[in-house]
Amino acid sequence: MGDIRQSLLPRDVLSAAKELLYHLDIYICNLVQSGRQPPQVDAKTLELVEEFILHAPKDRNAPARKMSALQELQLLEIMCSCFQEQSRDTVRQLMFSALFHIQGNQADESRMVLLGKLVSMAVAVGRVPILECAATWLQRTHRVYCVRLAQVLVDDYCSMVPGSVPTLQNIHSMSPRFCCQFITAVSTLYDLSSELVPPLELLQMIVSWIQEDPRLVLITFLNTPLSGSQPISSLDVTPLGSLVRWCVKAPLAYRNEKKQVLANRSADSEPDPRPLFSALHLSVLQVFMLLPNVLNEKGLFGRLALLQMESVAALTSDLSRLLDQADKHAHTSAAGAQVPPQLALDRLAQALQVAMASGALLCSREDLRPICSRLPHNNLLQLVLSGPVMYYNNIHTPPLAYSPHAAHSPIASHAPLPTRSPHTPLTSHAQYPAQPFMSGMPFAFRPGH
Image: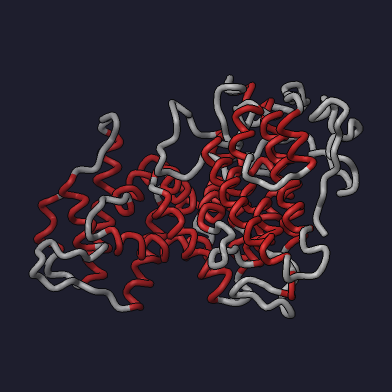
Protein backbone atom coordinates (compact mmCIF):
# COMPACT_ATOMS: atom_id res chain seq x y z
CA MET A 1 0.00 0.00 0.00
CA GLY A 2 3.01 2.27 0.21
CA ASP A 3 2.50 3.44 -3.39
CA ILE A 4 -0.79 5.23 -2.64
CA ARG A 5 0.83 7.90 -0.46
CA GLN A 6 1.39 10.29 -3.33
CA SER A 7 -2.28 10.08 -4.30
CA LEU A 8 -3.34 10.89 -0.73
CA LEU A 9 -1.13 13.95 -0.19
CA PRO A 10 -3.13 16.40 -2.33
CA ARG A 11 -6.45 15.44 -0.73
CA ASP A 12 -8.04 17.22 2.21
CA VAL A 13 -7.64 15.46 5.55
CA LEU A 14 -11.08 13.82 5.64
CA SER A 15 -10.98 12.64 2.05
CA ALA A 16 -7.47 11.20 2.51
CA ALA A 17 -8.48 9.33 5.68
CA LYS A 18 -11.60 7.93 4.01
CA GLU A 19 -9.63 6.78 0.98
CA LEU A 20 -7.00 5.12 3.16
CA LEU A 21 -9.66 3.22 5.14
CA TYR A 22 -11.09 1.94 1.86
CA HIS A 23 -7.68 0.71 0.67
CA LEU A 24 -6.87 -0.70 4.12
CA ASP A 25 -10.02 -2.82 4.03
CA ILE A 26 -9.12 -4.24 0.60
CA TYR A 27 -5.49 -4.82 1.62
CA ILE A 28 -6.45 -6.75 4.78
CA CYS A 29 -9.07 -8.82 2.93
CA ASN A 30 -6.40 -9.89 0.43
CA LEU A 31 -3.98 -10.55 3.27
CA VAL A 32 -6.44 -12.89 4.97
CA GLN A 33 -7.32 -14.65 1.71
CA SER A 34 -3.64 -15.29 0.99
CA GLY A 35 -3.60 -17.75 3.88
CA ARG A 36 -0.42 -16.33 5.37
CA GLN A 37 -0.19 -17.33 9.04
CA PRO A 38 -0.31 -15.27 11.04
CA PRO A 39 -1.55 -12.44 8.80
CA GLN A 40 0.40 -9.30 9.61
CA VAL A 41 0.04 -5.74 8.38
CA ASP A 42 3.35 -4.41 7.04
CA ALA A 43 5.20 -1.43 8.50
CA LYS A 44 4.60 0.88 5.52
CA THR A 45 0.85 0.47 5.89
CA LEU A 46 1.07 1.30 9.59
CA GLU A 47 3.01 4.45 8.71
CA LEU A 48 0.24 5.51 6.34
CA VAL A 49 -2.31 5.03 9.12
CA GLU A 50 -0.29 7.23 11.44
CA GLU A 51 0.18 9.93 8.81
CA PHE A 52 -3.29 10.17 7.27
CA ILE A 53 -5.65 8.96 10.01
CA LEU A 54 -3.81 9.78 13.22
CA HIS A 55 -2.11 12.80 11.61
CA ALA A 56 1.35 12.17 12.99
CA PRO A 57 3.65 13.95 10.46
CA LYS A 58 6.07 11.71 8.58
CA ASP A 59 8.60 14.51 8.62
CA ARG A 60 9.20 16.26 11.96
CA ASN A 61 9.55 19.57 10.18
CA ALA A 62 6.27 19.20 8.31
CA PRO A 63 3.17 20.81 9.82
CA ALA A 64 0.66 18.41 11.35
CA ARG A 65 -2.54 17.87 9.38
CA LYS A 66 -5.51 18.59 11.63
CA MET A 67 -9.22 17.96 11.36
CA SER A 68 -11.98 20.25 12.43
CA ALA A 69 -14.47 18.95 15.00
CA LEU A 70 -17.01 18.34 12.23
CA GLN A 71 -14.50 16.46 10.07
CA GLU A 72 -13.51 14.33 13.06
CA LEU A 73 -17.15 13.44 13.69
CA GLN A 74 -17.56 12.52 10.01
CA LEU A 75 -14.45 10.33 10.20
CA LEU A 76 -15.83 8.50 13.25
CA GLU A 77 -19.10 7.87 11.40
CA ILE A 78 -17.16 6.53 8.40
CA MET A 79 -15.14 4.21 10.66
CA CYS A 80 -18.31 2.96 12.38
CA SER A 81 -19.83 2.16 8.99
CA CYS A 82 -16.62 0.51 7.79
CA PHE A 83 -16.54 -1.95 10.70
CA GLN A 84 -20.30 -2.50 10.59
CA GLU A 85 -20.30 -3.38 6.89
CA GLN A 86 -17.29 -5.71 7.06
CA SER A 87 -18.78 -9.16 7.77
CA ARG A 88 -15.52 -11.05 8.44
CA ASP A 89 -14.40 -10.84 12.04
CA THR A 90 -10.77 -11.66 11.19
CA VAL A 91 -10.63 -8.67 8.83
CA ARG A 92 -12.25 -6.38 11.39
CA GLN A 93 -9.83 -7.44 14.12
CA LEU A 94 -6.79 -6.92 11.89
CA MET A 95 -8.03 -3.51 10.78
CA PHE A 96 -8.71 -2.47 14.37
CA SER A 97 -5.22 -3.61 15.35
CA ALA A 98 -3.67 -1.69 12.44
CA LEU A 99 -5.43 1.44 13.62
CA PHE A 100 -5.10 1.19 17.38
CA HIS A 101 -2.35 -1.26 18.39
CA ILE A 102 0.02 0.64 20.68
CA GLN A 103 3.33 1.12 18.85
CA GLY A 104 5.36 2.93 21.49
CA ASN A 105 5.83 6.07 19.39
CA GLN A 106 4.62 9.66 19.29
CA ALA A 107 1.45 8.68 17.42
CA ASP A 108 0.13 6.69 20.41
CA GLU A 109 -1.41 9.76 22.06
CA SER A 110 -3.45 10.52 18.92
CA ARG A 111 -4.25 6.82 18.67
CA MET A 112 -5.73 6.75 22.18
CA VAL A 113 -7.74 9.94 21.68
CA LEU A 114 -9.30 8.61 18.47
CA LEU A 115 -9.91 5.19 20.03
CA GLY A 116 -11.72 6.72 23.00
CA LYS A 117 -14.00 8.76 20.73
CA LEU A 118 -14.69 5.79 18.43
CA VAL A 119 -15.59 3.38 21.24
CA SER A 120 -17.71 6.03 22.95
CA MET A 121 -19.62 6.57 19.71
CA ALA A 122 -19.97 2.78 19.23
CA VAL A 123 -21.59 2.57 22.67
CA ALA A 124 -23.96 5.43 21.81
CA VAL A 125 -25.10 4.09 18.43
CA GLY A 126 -24.84 0.36 19.18
CA ARG A 127 -22.00 -0.65 16.86
CA VAL A 128 -21.35 -4.16 18.20
CA PRO A 129 -18.45 -5.05 15.82
CA ILE A 130 -16.41 -2.15 17.20
CA LEU A 131 -17.16 -3.18 20.79
CA GLU A 132 -16.08 -6.74 20.00
CA CYS A 133 -12.82 -5.47 18.50
CA ALA A 134 -12.31 -3.21 21.52
CA ALA A 135 -12.80 -6.21 23.82
CA THR A 136 -9.94 -8.00 22.07
CA TRP A 137 -7.82 -4.84 22.24
CA LEU A 138 -8.41 -4.65 26.00
CA GLN A 139 -7.18 -8.24 26.39
CA ARG A 140 -3.94 -7.61 24.49
CA THR A 141 -2.94 -4.11 25.56
CA HIS A 142 -0.98 -2.81 28.52
CA ARG A 143 -3.29 -2.05 31.42
CA VAL A 144 -2.19 1.60 31.51
CA TYR A 145 -3.90 2.16 28.17
CA CYS A 146 -6.86 -0.03 29.09
CA VAL A 147 -7.75 2.06 32.12
CA ARG A 148 -7.38 5.22 29.99
CA LEU A 149 -10.05 3.92 27.63
CA ALA A 150 -12.26 2.96 30.57
CA GLN A 151 -11.84 6.45 32.03
CA VAL A 152 -13.02 8.03 28.77
CA LEU A 153 -16.24 6.00 28.85
CA VAL A 154 -16.87 6.76 32.52
CA ASP A 155 -16.32 10.47 31.90
CA ASP A 156 -18.58 10.48 28.84
CA TYR A 157 -21.47 8.50 30.31
CA CYS A 158 -21.27 9.00 34.09
CA SER A 159 -20.02 12.58 34.37
CA MET A 160 -20.33 14.80 31.31
CA VAL A 161 -23.83 14.04 30.01
CA PRO A 162 -26.57 13.71 32.66
CA GLY A 163 -28.96 10.84 32.10
CA SER A 164 -26.69 8.92 29.71
CA VAL A 165 -25.91 6.03 32.09
CA PRO A 166 -28.63 3.75 30.59
CA THR A 167 -26.85 3.99 27.24
CA LEU A 168 -23.62 2.64 28.75
CA GLN A 169 -25.58 0.01 30.66
CA ASN A 170 -26.68 -1.49 27.34
CA ILE A 171 -23.19 -2.83 26.61
CA HIS A 172 -24.11 -5.86 28.75
CA SER A 173 -26.58 -7.00 26.10
CA MET A 174 -24.72 -5.57 23.08
CA SER A 175 -21.31 -7.14 23.75
CA PRO A 176 -20.85 -9.25 26.92
CA ARG A 177 -17.15 -9.65 26.05
CA PHE A 178 -16.62 -5.91 26.04
CA CYS A 179 -18.72 -5.52 29.19
CA CYS A 180 -16.55 -8.05 31.04
CA GLN A 181 -13.37 -6.27 29.95
CA PHE A 182 -14.87 -2.90 30.88
CA ILE A 183 -15.61 -4.16 34.41
CA THR A 184 -12.03 -5.43 34.68
CA ALA A 185 -10.61 -2.12 33.48
CA VAL A 186 -12.71 0.15 35.72
CA SER A 187 -12.18 -2.05 38.77
CA THR A 188 -8.45 -1.73 38.09
CA LEU A 189 -8.73 2.02 37.61
CA TYR A 190 -10.54 2.79 40.88
CA ASP A 191 -8.64 1.59 43.93
CA LEU A 192 -10.92 3.28 46.49
CA SER A 193 -8.31 5.76 47.59
CA SER A 194 -9.44 9.28 48.38
CA GLU A 195 -9.13 10.33 44.73
CA LEU A 196 -10.13 7.11 43.00
CA VAL A 197 -13.61 6.00 44.02
CA PRO A 198 -16.11 4.84 41.39
CA PRO A 199 -19.00 7.18 40.61
CA LEU A 200 -22.21 5.97 42.21
CA GLU A 201 -23.87 5.44 38.82
CA LEU A 202 -20.99 3.22 37.71
CA LEU A 203 -21.14 1.20 40.92
CA GLN A 204 -24.91 0.70 40.55
CA MET A 205 -24.42 -0.43 36.98
CA ILE A 206 -21.72 -2.98 37.79
CA VAL A 207 -23.68 -4.41 40.71
CA SER A 208 -26.81 -4.79 38.56
CA TRP A 209 -24.84 -6.52 35.79
CA ILE A 210 -23.27 -9.07 38.12
CA GLN A 211 -26.48 -9.69 40.06
CA GLU A 212 -28.30 -10.34 36.79
CA ASP A 213 -25.60 -12.69 35.47
CA PRO A 214 -22.69 -13.57 37.79
CA ARG A 215 -21.03 -15.52 34.99
CA LEU A 216 -20.51 -12.25 33.11
CA VAL A 217 -17.22 -11.63 34.92
CA LEU A 218 -15.92 -15.02 33.75
CA ILE A 219 -16.51 -14.52 30.01
CA THR A 220 -12.91 -13.56 29.19
CA PHE A 221 -11.58 -16.51 31.18
CA LEU A 222 -14.06 -18.93 29.60
CA ASN A 223 -13.16 -17.90 26.07
CA THR A 224 -9.43 -17.29 26.27
CA PRO A 225 -6.99 -20.13 25.54
CA LEU A 226 -4.56 -20.02 28.44
CA SER A 227 -1.21 -21.18 27.10
CA GLY A 228 0.67 -19.89 30.12
CA SER A 229 0.67 -17.13 32.66
CA GLN A 230 -0.89 -13.84 31.65
CA PRO A 231 1.57 -11.04 30.79
CA ILE A 232 2.22 -8.95 33.88
CA SER A 233 1.31 -5.76 32.01
CA SER A 234 -2.13 -6.91 30.86
CA LEU A 235 -5.44 -6.73 32.66
CA ASP A 236 -6.32 -9.69 34.86
CA VAL A 237 -8.25 -12.45 33.13
CA THR A 238 -11.17 -11.76 35.50
CA PRO A 239 -12.04 -8.72 37.62
CA LEU A 240 -12.47 -10.87 40.75
CA GLY A 241 -9.32 -9.64 42.50
CA SER A 242 -10.18 -5.99 41.94
CA LEU A 243 -13.80 -6.49 42.98
CA VAL A 244 -12.69 -8.18 46.21
CA ARG A 245 -10.52 -5.13 46.85
CA TRP A 246 -13.52 -2.86 46.33
CA CYS A 247 -15.69 -4.83 48.77
CA VAL A 248 -13.03 -5.07 51.48
CA LYS A 249 -11.95 -1.42 51.33
CA ALA A 250 -15.42 0.07 50.93
CA PRO A 251 -16.33 0.14 54.66
CA LEU A 252 -13.25 2.29 55.27
CA ALA A 253 -13.46 4.43 52.15
CA TYR A 254 -17.09 5.28 52.87
CA ARG A 255 -17.03 5.37 56.67
CA ASN A 256 -19.69 7.69 58.03
CA GLU A 257 -17.96 9.47 60.92
CA LYS A 258 -18.99 13.13 60.96
CA LYS A 259 -20.98 12.43 57.77
CA GLN A 260 -17.66 12.56 55.95
CA VAL A 261 -17.74 11.50 52.32
CA LEU A 262 -15.00 11.38 49.77
CA ALA A 263 -13.91 14.38 47.77
CA ASN A 264 -16.39 14.53 44.92
CA ARG A 265 -19.53 13.44 46.75
CA SER A 266 -22.35 15.18 48.57
CA ALA A 267 -23.63 13.26 51.58
CA ASP A 268 -26.97 15.02 51.44
CA SER A 269 -27.69 14.61 47.73
CA GLU A 270 -26.46 11.09 46.93
CA PRO A 271 -27.62 7.74 48.30
CA ASP A 272 -25.40 5.76 50.64
CA PRO A 273 -23.16 3.53 48.47
CA ARG A 274 -22.46 1.00 51.24
CA PRO A 275 -25.48 -1.26 50.53
CA LEU A 276 -24.28 -1.52 46.94
CA PHE A 277 -20.91 -2.80 48.11
CA SER A 278 -22.70 -5.29 50.36
CA ALA A 279 -24.66 -6.59 47.37
CA LEU A 280 -21.46 -6.68 45.30
CA HIS A 281 -19.68 -8.64 48.03
CA LEU A 282 -22.37 -11.31 48.04
CA SER A 283 -22.33 -11.51 44.24
CA VAL A 284 -18.54 -11.92 44.18
CA LEU A 285 -18.77 -14.76 46.71
CA GLN A 286 -21.40 -16.42 44.52
CA VAL A 287 -19.09 -16.14 41.49
CA PHE A 288 -16.36 -17.87 43.49
CA MET A 289 -18.84 -20.64 44.28
CA LEU A 290 -19.29 -21.27 40.55
CA LEU A 291 -15.58 -21.78 39.90
CA PRO A 292 -14.93 -25.42 40.93
CA ASN A 293 -16.94 -26.86 38.03
CA VAL A 294 -15.59 -24.22 35.65
CA LEU A 295 -12.00 -25.01 36.58
CA ASN A 296 -12.64 -28.77 36.49
CA GLU A 297 -14.09 -28.53 32.98
CA LYS A 298 -10.95 -26.75 31.81
CA GLY A 299 -8.71 -29.19 33.68
CA LEU A 300 -7.36 -26.29 35.73
CA PHE A 301 -8.69 -26.98 39.23
CA GLY A 302 -5.70 -26.69 41.56
CA ARG A 303 -3.49 -25.48 38.71
CA LEU A 304 -4.62 -21.93 37.93
CA ALA A 305 -5.15 -19.21 40.52
CA LEU A 306 -7.73 -16.65 39.43
CA LEU A 307 -7.02 -14.73 42.62
CA GLN A 308 -3.28 -14.16 42.85
CA MET A 309 -1.34 -14.18 46.12
CA GLU A 310 0.34 -10.94 45.03
CA SER A 311 -3.08 -9.32 44.84
CA VAL A 312 -3.99 -10.59 48.32
CA ALA A 313 -0.69 -9.36 49.74
CA ALA A 314 -1.19 -5.91 48.23
CA LEU A 315 -4.74 -5.77 49.58
CA THR A 316 -3.75 -6.74 53.14
CA SER A 317 -0.91 -4.22 53.11
CA ASP A 318 -3.25 -1.48 51.93
CA LEU A 319 -5.89 -2.57 54.42
CA SER A 320 -3.40 -2.48 57.28
CA ARG A 321 -2.52 1.11 56.42
CA LEU A 322 -6.16 2.14 56.18
CA LEU A 323 -7.00 0.44 59.48
CA ASP A 324 -4.17 2.28 61.20
CA GLN A 325 -5.62 5.54 59.92
CA ALA A 326 -9.13 4.49 61.03
CA ASP A 327 -7.81 3.59 64.48
CA LYS A 328 -6.25 7.03 64.90
CA HIS A 329 -9.46 8.65 63.75
CA ALA A 330 -11.52 6.52 66.15
CA HIS A 331 -9.88 8.15 69.18
CA THR A 332 -11.70 11.38 68.32
CA SER A 333 -14.95 9.74 67.14
CA ALA A 334 -18.07 8.49 68.90
CA ALA A 335 -18.44 4.96 70.15
CA GLY A 336 -19.09 2.43 67.44
CA ALA A 337 -16.58 3.87 65.00
CA GLN A 338 -14.85 0.50 64.87
CA VAL A 339 -17.72 -1.14 62.99
CA PRO A 340 -16.33 -0.31 59.50
CA PRO A 341 -12.86 -1.77 60.24
CA GLN A 342 -14.40 -4.98 61.58
CA LEU A 343 -16.68 -5.24 58.57
CA ALA A 344 -13.69 -4.82 56.26
CA LEU A 345 -11.87 -7.64 58.06
CA ASP A 346 -14.97 -9.84 58.00
CA ARG A 347 -15.27 -9.39 54.26
CA LEU A 348 -11.59 -10.16 53.76
CA ALA A 349 -11.98 -13.35 55.78
CA GLN A 350 -15.04 -14.44 53.83
CA ALA A 351 -13.39 -13.72 50.49
CA LEU A 352 -10.22 -15.63 51.42
CA GLN A 353 -12.17 -18.62 52.73
CA VAL A 354 -14.46 -18.92 49.73
CA ALA A 355 -11.62 -18.27 47.25
CA MET A 356 -9.49 -21.04 48.79
CA ALA A 357 -12.43 -23.43 49.05
CA SER A 358 -13.37 -22.89 45.41
CA GLY A 359 -9.83 -23.27 44.05
CA ALA A 360 -9.52 -19.63 42.98
CA LEU A 361 -6.76 -18.91 45.52
CA LEU A 362 -4.01 -21.53 45.63
CA CYS A 363 -2.22 -21.25 48.93
CA SER A 364 -2.04 -22.78 52.37
CA ARG A 365 -3.03 -21.27 55.69
CA GLU A 366 0.67 -20.97 56.44
CA ASP A 367 1.11 -18.82 53.33
CA LEU A 368 -1.66 -16.46 54.45
CA ARG A 369 -0.63 -16.01 58.09
CA PRO A 370 2.44 -13.82 57.48
CA ILE A 371 0.52 -11.75 54.91
CA CYS A 372 -2.26 -11.09 57.44
CA SER A 373 -0.01 -10.76 60.48
CA ARG A 374 -0.13 -6.94 60.59
CA LEU A 375 -3.92 -6.81 60.57
CA PRO A 376 -5.82 -6.23 63.81
CA HIS A 377 -7.43 -9.19 65.51
CA ASN A 378 -10.70 -10.34 63.98
CA ASN A 379 -12.51 -13.47 65.13
CA LEU A 380 -13.62 -14.54 61.69
CA LEU A 381 -10.23 -13.97 60.11
CA GLN A 382 -8.60 -15.90 62.95
CA LEU A 383 -10.85 -18.87 62.23
CA VAL A 384 -10.03 -18.74 58.52
CA LEU A 385 -6.30 -18.66 59.21
CA SER A 386 -6.44 -21.58 61.64
CA GLY A 387 -9.18 -23.85 60.31
CA PRO A 388 -9.01 -26.60 57.67
CA VAL A 389 -9.70 -25.92 53.99
CA MET A 390 -12.92 -27.52 52.75
CA TYR A 391 -12.82 -27.56 48.97
CA TYR A 392 -16.02 -26.99 47.03
CA ASN A 393 -15.14 -29.36 44.21
CA ASN A 394 -18.48 -31.14 44.25
CA ILE A 395 -20.83 -28.17 43.86
CA HIS A 396 -23.51 -29.01 41.31
CA THR A 397 -23.61 -26.36 38.61
CA PRO A 398 -24.14 -27.02 34.91
CA PRO A 399 -21.28 -26.66 32.40
CA LEU A 400 -20.46 -23.12 31.37
CA ALA A 401 -19.80 -22.02 27.83
CA TYR A 402 -20.01 -18.70 26.05
CA SER A 403 -22.66 -18.72 23.35
CA PRO A 404 -23.02 -15.62 21.17
CA HIS A 405 -26.19 -17.14 19.73
CA ALA A 406 -28.07 -17.50 23.03
CA ALA A 407 -31.33 -15.63 22.77
CA HIS A 408 -31.73 -14.56 26.35
CA SER A 409 -28.24 -14.40 27.78
CA PRO A 410 -24.62 -14.07 26.63
CA ILE A 411 -23.95 -17.28 28.52
CA ALA A 412 -25.53 -20.60 27.66
CA SER A 413 -28.56 -21.57 29.70
CA HIS A 414 -27.84 -22.27 33.31
CA ALA A 415 -29.67 -22.94 36.52
CA PRO A 416 -30.34 -19.87 38.66
CA LEU A 417 -28.01 -19.13 41.51
CA PRO A 418 -29.24 -19.88 45.02
CA THR A 419 -30.69 -16.87 46.76
CA ARG A 420 -31.01 -16.13 50.41
CA SER A 421 -31.62 -13.43 52.91
CA PRO A 422 -28.58 -11.49 54.07
CA HIS A 423 -29.39 -12.83 57.53
CA THR A 424 -29.09 -16.46 56.46
CA PRO A 425 -25.69 -17.99 57.36
CA LEU A 426 -23.40 -18.21 54.36
CA THR A 427 -22.88 -21.92 54.95
CA SER A 428 -26.56 -22.86 55.01
CA HIS A 429 -26.88 -26.45 53.75
CA ALA A 430 -30.35 -25.66 52.40
CA GLN A 431 -28.86 -23.17 49.97
CA TYR A 432 -25.41 -24.62 49.22
CA PRO A 433 -25.26 -28.44 49.21
CA ALA A 434 -21.60 -28.69 50.15
CA GLN A 435 -19.28 -28.92 53.12
CA PRO A 436 -19.25 -25.94 55.49
CA PHE A 437 -16.21 -23.72 55.12
CA MET A 438 -14.87 -24.85 58.48
CA SER A 439 -16.25 -27.96 60.00
CA GLY A 440 -18.61 -26.96 62.77
CA MET A 441 -17.79 -23.28 62.26
CA PRO A 442 -20.49 -21.72 60.08
CA PHE A 443 -20.35 -17.96 59.97
CA ALA A 444 -22.89 -15.38 58.91
CA PHE A 445 -22.64 -13.06 55.96
CA ARG A 446 -22.51 -9.49 57.25
CA PRO A 447 -24.08 -7.17 54.71
CA GLY A 448 -23.13 -3.98 56.52
CA HIS A 449 -24.51 -1.52 59.02
